[in-house]
Length: 184
Ligand SMILES: NC(=O)c1ccc[n+]([C@@H]2O[C@H](COP(=O)([O-])OP(=O)(O)OC[C@H]3O[C@@H](n4cnc5c(N)ncnc54)[C@H](O)[C@@H]3O)[C@@H](O)[C@H]2O)c1
Image 1 (cartoon, protein in one colour):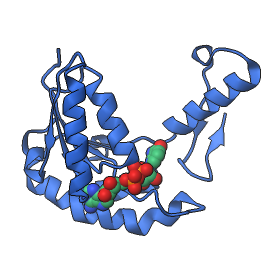
Image 2: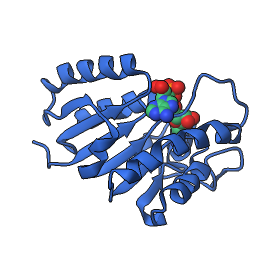
Image 3: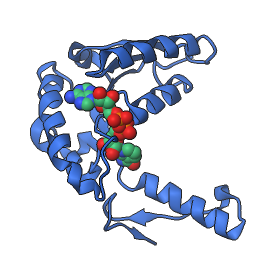
């Protein structure tokens, strides 16, 4: 059973569609509205996820969304970006990601969204700040994924090197999710 939460996912590429699949396999959301500028991808993923929900415990209602869905949403997730470019440094993505924020966040705000925005869009720490500025929301309402992926990778490398089970390893990468991060 799900607990009645509605999630709006904006950006349905590699990251967004993986997030969506994980979500429908959890019991966290009753409804998932997906928005992507690539409508064919959005609709194809909605149909595939609906098929999958027959086999999941939550039976999440998945559908193509619009910005009006933000009105009564409990969580808005930003997973847009562009993974197709061959970038050396995540900071190179600032301009394109900022344009995406300027295109989307005013529509989220205009529809009266009053919850938290979770984002993975790189460079994630910088873009979290841009989302805060553009939305006018307090910083507590903007949650970037930060170095969570780096920490997971670090723990995995240590597990492979030492032979210990990754479940027995606590390891953290701190700082920015980028070239200046530090493994501790
Ligand atoms: N924070 C992390 O740990 C982490 C990890 C992996 C990837 N990322 C970042 O996540 C982002 C997405 O990566 P990906 O591999 O899924 O990219 P992708 O290119 O596969 O998907 C991006 C999607 O965003 C959509 N999009 C672009 N502009 C949009 C807009 N204005 N409105 C709605 N949708 C829009 C595109 O159509 C595409 O489907 C990138 O910025 C990437 O660097 C972050």
